[in-house]
Length: 68
Image (cartoon, rainbow, N blue to C red; front, side, top):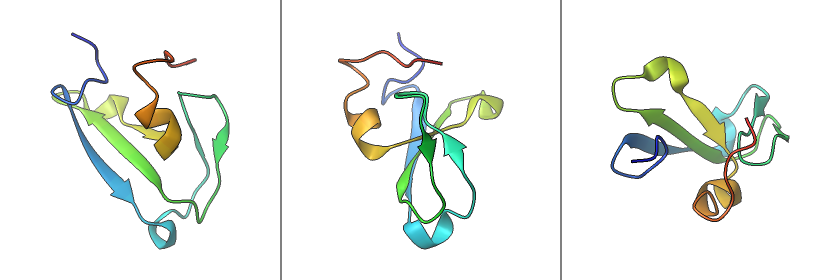
């Protein structure tokens, strides 16, 4: 089972007004700039592996493996 399967992690959408920092998307290895809505994925039992993803990268994660 993959770490980023829907069954193995909790996800939520971070609204643009909630995004106040720059994050690195593991799907494309590009910055998610402040003010950009995006997905936050947290694997069950591994909160330290929380990652911030562009919505398109999250949706395409089954077709494209994360770069980091």
